[in-house]
Image (cartoon, rainbow, N blue to C red; front, top):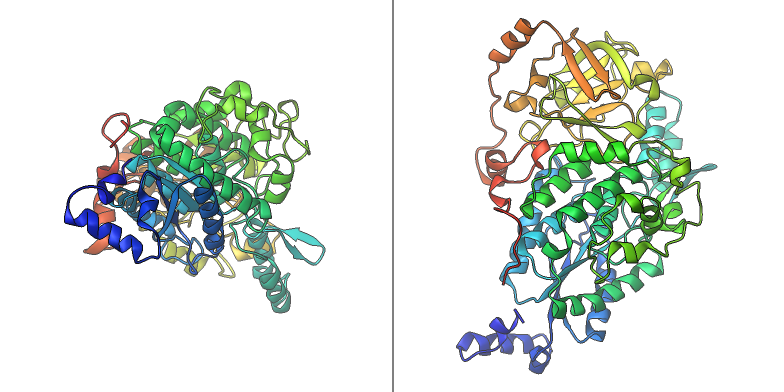
Length: 564
């Protein structure tokens, strides 16, 4: 075992390490032939999504002890989407490096990854893929539903809708206060198919969790039960030498994309899956997402694209029930963390509510949740969550109203008048990986307040930013290359005609070709946001959205090979 290098041998430091083990009150002979299991915990009081992971860790430890291993818990940085500025995405790669190096530097034979909030799941998968020792993931699970008056509400999606009512003057200060205290009723991540739920379900579809693990509510006792089972299982994975590179293959990544499309999952999953694939030496292009979206029906009737919440999805059968519906589209021979194939894991799955998890014959949409767009505004691609967009805006042409940056948008969006109407296309620049910086969730440009007062609920919005997976509307995101590096989005001017055609997968700026080239030739890069520290490292090495927004030096060279 890997840990023997630390504790067994003739050198002074072998003796000293055993002595320091005893300082914890552990017997030295615990390390004679037993796998050492690291528990990688992203718990933090600055991250309410992951606040309960200390209790989950204790359940994992019970399982590890039961299976004959030695559990040792260690922390990493934690990324709380709600609190971190300018965005948690700025620090996803830093957390992935923290996870990788904490695993690599310490005497662990296997690792259990405890995650939950949006960026903690992909960061841990990226770090584990790079370290490549046996690993299993235990997500923290979604929070329970809120209740506002007679309405059962979701923390992210419904909060946005109701806050727009407040902005429009429909809701009072007192009602907003009441909403505040009843919207998020427990620990756990948002109870919709936002980025957190999408990524934990993707982890399960990849095979990195036990079957049925992803969507158990955070406060459900079954969350601790499956954590204990995962602790037991990781010990066997060590003996089997079952590593992330054996589980996360090109075929399992294709399964994860299929699951994302059938779930109506977050657009952020595109960026994260490309980054995870890159850590494994797998080239994953946006064309793969488009190909799989075209063939995969949208089946999970969960907000923001649908009507139900994550509790309902779990009670209806969760991801195994959904995967069974699309089983012919999946690579069924992929090995999962429990040592069985995906086909074996879902063959007996049952659906208990066919309105929550639709059969293929009654799909909510014949295509998957995310569409990939191309065009002269986004030659390297852009994405739209087509299942959460307004059908009447899926083919649209309108005059652009341009925000040069997020600060201008915030200063203007609540003005009593702007020179726009329901046909306008709002465009925001300088919000991508380098321009944000960090690729913030600014792409869900709020509806202008004076349009809300007129009863307008949606207009087309375009940016090089991301948006929260809990968001909704006809919002085009991740325009690549971004405006801050000279991407064509940067030349759009107020009054230009923008043409969106989701069916044709196009997003174009309708100006003469010579004017297009003249404007591009005038590009001057903005001043960098950072001149030192991690921020400068990020700006110097981050890749574009279509490349996963990872650091160029962290991508694997060639397909992953098992490491010592």
